[in-house]
Amino acid sequence: MAPTSSKRVKNTKLTRHFLIGNEAHLLPHPGYPEPPPENHTKGWKVYVRPLPNGPDITTWLKKVQFKLHHTYNDASRTIEAPGPFEVQETGYGEFGVEIRLYFAPESGEKAVYREHYLVLAPYGSEEQKTRQERENLIVAERLETVEFNEPTVDFFKTLTSEDQFNWLKVKKGRGKGKKPDFVFEGDVEPNAQLPEKAAADTGGLGSGGAWSVLYERQVVAQLREAEKVLDASLDEERRGMEERRRRMEELGMAVAAK
Ligand code: SLL
Image (cartoon, rainbow, N blue to C red; front, side, top):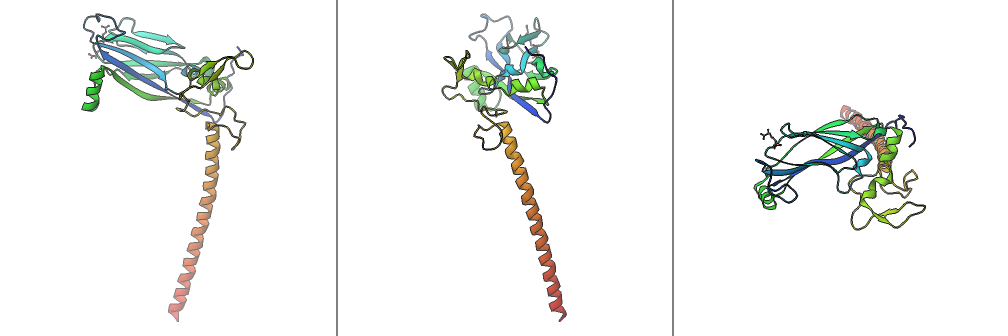
């Protein structure tokens, strides 16, 4: 591997969205020990996951540490990439799971902390609770965001690479050289997040590439420019109106003075 560059890409912020949550079932439930451990009435799984159609999170997420309630043996559970970043357990009570996210080494970023409070009992409207009970499934998850400000050059490269979407694609035979081609099949498309840069983007507006963050920035810049022009002409219009009003007043006074 090439030596890691600590050079940073200026004026650039990359964000990644992902999910933190838990699912829970009343025991007994398939996939959990039977009989359940004494006093344990719930089976649950706490997790850090990519968005269903989003880029691969292992591009930036290399390790997740889940810290459970101290009543658990080995309360600290560490999951390395490629994951899945999840911990399955049984228990009786809810508590806050402490979650530490560790980033790719080339990012030079320190680990960040999140907390997820386990939800093991039905919640929401009566209708929602009834459904959760009927399905014996509770899901409590939320959208999370990490921001990488002025990422290192190497990290920027991995975070803008097309490969991040390969996990949504199907391997198709062999492409040019030795690499397999990855192609989208069915209705799975990476639509949850704009790619930083369109695959075939040669830069510039109207270059025919897909919508991307780069393209979006250019459009925003153009709109700002247009807004400035419009503001200037509005100002001019306002000055003109003021001038006309002043002259009419003068005329009116001239007429009244006669
Ligand atoms: C509560 N404050 O009382 C919480 C504590 C404890 C969670 C929740 C069993 C651990 C084990 C378990 O569910 N601990 O027996 O290994 O609701």
